[in-house]
Image (cartoon, rainbow, N blue to C red; front, side, top):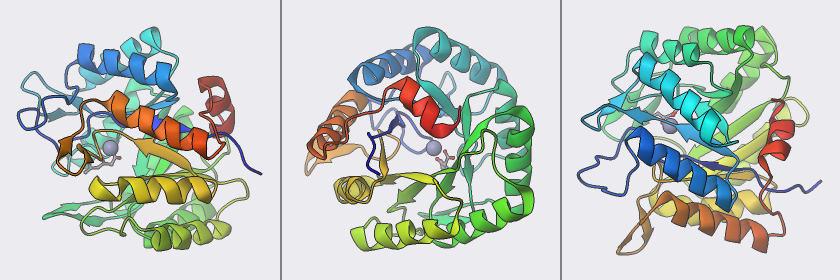
Length: 275
Ligand code: KMH
Ligand code: ZN
């Protein structure tokens, strides 16, 4: 059954430097303004990475709590904190993200080469994240960087049970150098593997860099949802830097409307995700 489109904005990430990408929201004020504007355009979920006063990636617990509170007060968006952080973040700090009590948190389903770095996600760490989120009623978004991560998710759910809320939602992060490519063929392969997951499992997809548009089109045409934002894409078109997250959300909303799958409201999104 075709439904509307869940649109997630990932406005900041941990990889781009403010000096190189001045439009990147890095302060709480910038993040909040971006969040409000993206919500008005049709985003329902915000995937959050925060920065410190020097605009470096941070998992500072106080800042995380303040960020969750400010987003809750200023918007109706579903607040999803990144437990992935930056490739340099230790596991303990990544687990402590859950102490900020977000609505959702990301949970990456395996280790992946990440450009010249390694994004480490050991099995025991994944189990810890999953079970702590179950205990605290935080809904995970399982991040899938490679096809094997879907097999790991099947194993995780088989051994440790469904997430809080009972609904399984995954996000295909495609086109990371070292992960699965951001192509239609790969998205179709990932989509087919969802048959091994619980009935009703939903997915969104994002394509890093220039794979953003092919992945968006492939996701919409296979019944998937969309994640967009400057975490994943800083070039709007050849030779044109992204001006704002709003520009990317507006484009995603336009594609979703063309596909006759308009953006889900935040209320509809909560229902879909089991929040
Ligand atoms: N920054 C990447 C190393 C997540 O947010 O959970 C990890 C990442 C995934 O962005
Ligand atoms: Zn992230």
